[in-house]
Length: 135
Image (cartoon, rainbow, N blue to C red):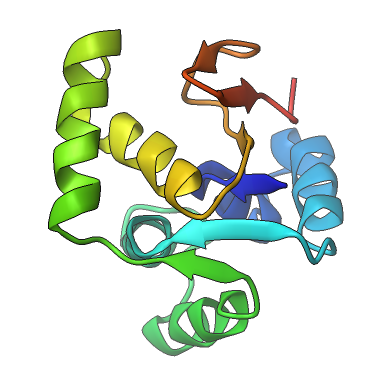
């Protein structure tokens, strides 16, 4: 059971030659059915994919359609309970709030592995382990 961080979704749409291997790996990951993500991940994806300074920027419509397509996966919402858990994780592991919220969203939907480049590869955060699939 795996949880996908925003960078995996962004690699999946990348047309950067230097990211071809990561794009292929990200698209392979997204063919699985056992993935989870969160509203935060979808929001970050939309904002970053449509950022005017992004070289391979998507239109608002393209990004919105992709967000809709990602709803095929289990999506964890953000509520007060998740926010408070993220604050505790943030303090305990000295992480940014946003990284802690990713870990807590994964935990909330029963995912044991977070696929991300942004956290320490191999580290276990109280039962949620991070794997960097693009190394």
